[in-house]
Structures are given as C-alpha cells and as structure tokens.
Image 1 (spheres, protein in one colour):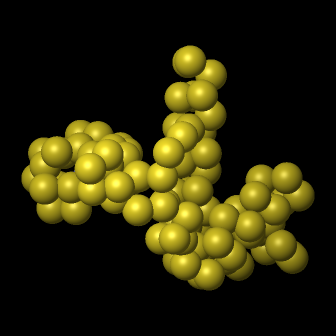
Image 2 (image 1 turned 60 degrees about the horizontal axis):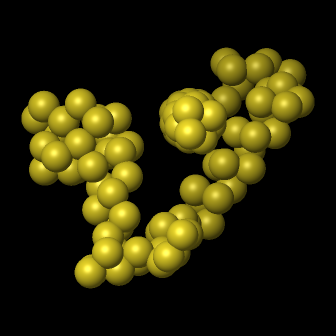
Length: 96
Ligand SMILES: [Zn+2]
C-alpha cells in the first residue's frame, strides 16, 4: 500500500460513528476519516500504550486483583475501542 497523500487519500471508517454518520461532527457526516499522511504518525504514545494494555488484558486477563472494577473508566473505554477496532479490521481482512 502506498503512503496516503492529498492526491491519493486513504478513506477509513469513522471511529466515532462507525460509518453511521447521522449527526457525526467528527467525519462531517461522511462516515469516513480522510487520511493524507501515514496513519502511524497519528498514534500517540498514550494510544500505543492503551493498545498494548488492551492486548495484554485480552490474552492474560485484567491486571491485579479486582478486574474491571479496579480499572479506570478511561482505560475501560480505551480497551473497548481497541477491541472494536481489532474485530472490525480482522473481519475486514477475513472478508477479502
Ligand atoms: Zn463519523
């Protein structure tokens, strides 16, 4: 795959409305995010860390004693977003 550019942008399903854009301001009701640069350049250290933690939880369970009740709401939301995106892209890859 070539690096996205302004001339050849990459269209990805909107991660806020998941392609159902009624009223979505994130994608201006298109259902897509338009990328004109490398998607990896948009991943912050916090996001990368959340992806690593979600992967660990999926494979080894919640860290320490109390499971989900001991996790911050931000991490629970981040983990759910990561799992949704992973499932979406795995399904997309399997449909090809
Ligand atoms: Zn949207």
